[in-house]
Amino acid sequence: MGTSLPLPKYHQIYLVLREQLQEGRFADGLPGELALADQFGVARVTVRKALEQLENEGLIERAPGRGTIPRMPAADGTRGAGARLTGLLENIVNMGLRTSVKVLSCETLAADDEVAAALQLDPGTPVQKAVRVRSTAQGPLSLITTHVPADLAAGFGRRELGRKPLLVLLEASGVRIGSAVQTISAQLADAATARHLDVPVGSALLAVTRLVRDEAERPVQWLHGLYRPDRYQYRMQLSRVGSIDAKLWVSTELSAQFH
Image (cartoon, rainbow, N blue to C red; front, side):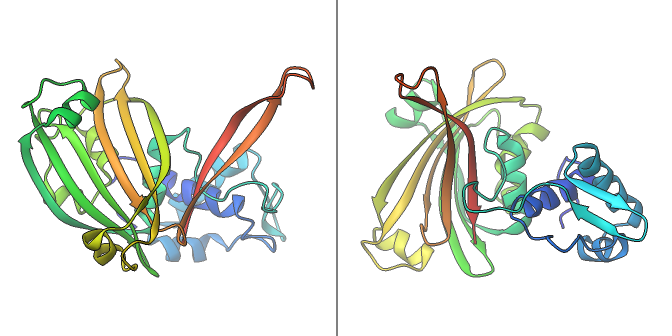
């Protein structure tokens, strides 16, 4: 696992194990500390700290002679597997730990009218545009295009984007991520997209547009992503609010699953 992410190693391990617990992977018990330390390439004390955090949250139980067992129910299809998107940075870190990325391009250019409007900039303001393909062991997962105000992207470029998630780089540069608004729709793959994602031209893709703001509500990233629907999905849990006649549903959880 990468050691350059700003989150402590134990917390990275905690995030991955928590996600796997949500997926119901450890019905027969978690691997031992030594096995986990070997799996993640860290010291045993680091794994122990991650397990302590899971135990403090009531997600696992550790008992002498019985090992470590999950205390939460296994996934039954009614809850999505993956990290909660309400914790946007955690979701990106989880994905970064389990996928690889290829940077196709990274350049600073003048914002056109569409980009300037999204980022609340004057047209022509310098922005960093990056295009990346993210993949799993099974192949390409997504084609991502991001725009970031150039003054916020001064500390990183193509090399850093190939090593760390963009939100992690922004936070390392001093940006405090506050909120994000995301829209999900559909789009057909053109020739270039089809080549990058290894799908036929005209294939239906999930199209994700995400505007990320800092704690002062300044737009800091505008993202357009195209995802293969056979390898990536969103799942939302809804809760009813008000009386039975109100028929009002609100989302309580959104999760991302990829393979």
